Length: 276
Image (cartoon, rainbow, N blue to C red; front, side, top):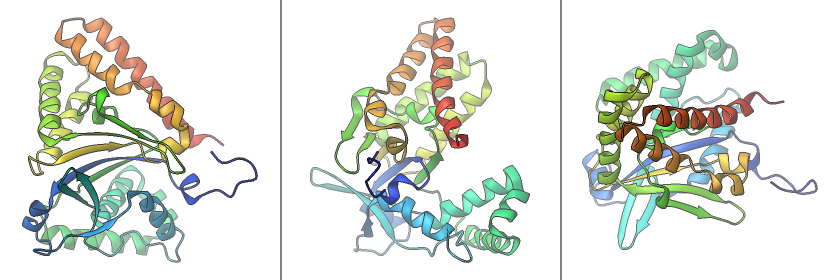
């Protein structure tokens, strides 16, 4: 974090969010109706939170931005992969979730007219695109434990500098295999069906995309919240891998004790959202 005399960057004050992204080959995006023969407009993931903040403080607030062909670009060797921002779709989904969790609070925050307009817009859009699935999942103030299932500790990538980051990245084929194996294991051993269902839903989501894609977990603003040193030391991926290995070996008590430690760790991070 900057010192007391430094001017804070916008990334220091916007919401602390993590992201799970799927990148696909450009040909797969064209199959979804993109502009044939033309790459999407590349944007930097770091600007997304700032853009979201600008929309929320606008008068009136903009709950669903205009749809664009913007996408995040990932280059691996000579291959280029693209992750559509899908921000309009994701904002609509966030409004729907907020409405289910507390419709009255949502309307007090944004106004009944804005909420109604966003809801109706989403229904029209969904009717025209029943097949659409967002390429990005976002979580505020923590990383959902199920996301770690798709990765191995060796796949962590750390970037230092003015805008540090911690990401995990793996191939779609590897992510699918890990999630499928974890789901089959949890169906036999997990005492809490919510975890099993969460891993199942994760598998269903990544199966919607191109088999030669790339899956990325980005700790995003949590690096700013917790500090780079703490996030780069975090062993949640390795610990969850150990939980699954213990379950596979029949060491259930050890597995669930380790899982509770992991769960408590991220619950404490979530509780920072209510800190004054």
